[in-house]
Amino acid sequence: MAITFYEELHSPHDIFCLYNKAATRLRLLAVSYNNKNVSVSTETFNKIIIVPSSSRFFQNYEHIKSLKRSHIIGYDICDNYPVRKPEKCEELFQLADFITCTNVFLKKQIDEYLGYSKPVYVIEDPVWYNFSKPSFNPKEKIEILLYEAGDEQRKLYIEKTIKEISKRFNVNITLMSRIDFMELQFNYNFVKFTVEKQEALTKKADFVILPSDPKDPWLNSKSPNRVVDGLACGTMVIADKIDSYLPFTPYAEITDNFVKSMEHCLENRKLTLERIKNGQVFIKNNFSKKIIRDKWNKLSHTLTGTN
Image (cartoon, rainbow, N blue to C red; front, side, top):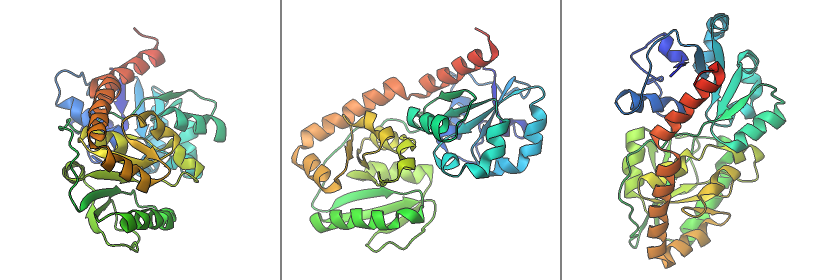
């Protein structure tokens, strides 16, 4: 594989930026490195260097710029934040020879809103977790895992969504985020995000809830990795109806009414369980580590003109 991720130049044994295990774009090589069925190159003189969309790399701009003399530079956008606030990463946009991103909706925003004239390639996030046996057997008190990245601007929308659910159902809510950011006006247990905790809590939950506020046009391009994570762990996901989630409609509740979606699942338990099972098949066929790794390999051949 002719691609090196920028962090490898400094720590070639910590493949794919292991410092940030929460970022799915960076954790693929962590998996690949320990998987003899997936090839990984640790050579630092490879032709293509990918710069992940992490703020720490902006500080290394001059070094990245110096590498451009002998390398093809790519800028990998794992979510829509660099597009929403392009001024923060304008230099990397201009420096890069190409961009990679997680879905066609994000590519559209990059092409149309930023007027980016260089090639933009879509390479999806891989499924991170090993598949768990699907289950759906809610008890009297329904266990909900609410995942929120920590955006204060969505506070009122999240509160509205959860209050509607709490009014209709007897629920126990666990909020998982990187920061306990906003003292929401409903009862919940806060858990700081880690990959390990997310897996354990997702398996325990009856529903994973992903509120995204579809009125915000920028959120239409969010990576669907949390939908993939939930289904892979064997749990039904209920998420707002945004464009990047729509391909998962047969397997998860992609909805504009969380209460009705929960009612539908609870009234059709066998069907809900079958949808989770089918979702896992869909993920295996489209988001496996090997499939995504092959896409990176194919891109490297495209960019270097090799077979």
